[in-house]
Image (cartoon, rainbow, N blue to C red):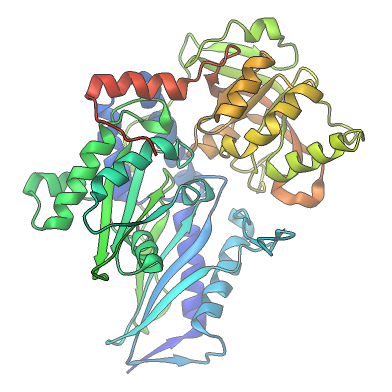
Length: 508
């Protein structure tokens, strides 16, 4: 019989969440380094260089890899021969106590992203609780915990289907990737669940993402069963699509494919896909009664010797004086370095702005978009001498439905976000001769170093979704949609797919 203190469990959860907020798993670093050195697409290689540089900076500064510090998911297995000392909480309550402690640590505040009343007021809970907890009672005298912090951009790209038994699941999986866009921040992992029932398949997909990356080793030794054959086949066919890092076109879209399966009904074939983004935050630990868990960080020499620097020919842009005539000269895929004043705004701020405009009311004082750019971001709170915490972009397609109104009625001329834009937004951008620029998802701390000052100018009650005004200097971005409506997320993957070799993609 093992005795485990409730506080040791809580402290272990808190320490684990801090640990994964600023340390990439070594297997991910190794896999991304291999992909970086093999990459032939300049845009994708630059994106991976930013992610790797950001990773090293976060490890050294103990700051979040991404501004979206995730919703916590925990898989807890409690041994039957475990007893709890001084326990007054359930397993779920203990996990939540750990989340609360971990996310509110003053030296490394993690962004609270969880909202209650999801179909109604969607009010932020303030401490990132509650977590999503799955637990089981198993033989043994230890407590086994696998915990992750799952970003919204990748979680939102999850897919689930009930296939017929005779349907080709590889075909279905590969067909989904072009429709998932780049909001899940490739290159990352695909977690796939097969079998069981609808909810079991999704749970299997999520659980598979807790495993280490081992595709190189698997290919070297060869598959030993049907699941491993599927992993290799899907990996090769997805990468042959040419989607590439951040959807810019390239050789590496996924670094690994994980699959867990479960027996299912004879009439069914449930399949679920959940992607993991470039943050890839998860860790595994055990408690054996000897105290709280300890975590060993990667060594500095474990980090690839990759240090991103802006290209010498990158175009420098003064946001305070830029004109539509300037915008017309920018080309899809071109690198820009932004300096000057930049307003921010995400989903909630856009909704308020559009509602005010619909009522014929004025925007709040200090919110003037005329001739200006908006950055889709919800930054982490600053600590110590920071002016702002990690401040990477959020998925831009969520703002697509607001784009026409913003461009038509506010004088806005440009937007900065993550990943591609949808058809509606691109049409609005072309109509108003505006532009959309893309910052790299997974490089939040690197981006924050370009922000020289930060202040809230409106909607302070929205927390991280408030409207800020940033003063930036040489903030790196890529022209993703130019003033003629040409999208690098269409041009890049199409070009690299041809180079790699065509795969028929069924329209769905």
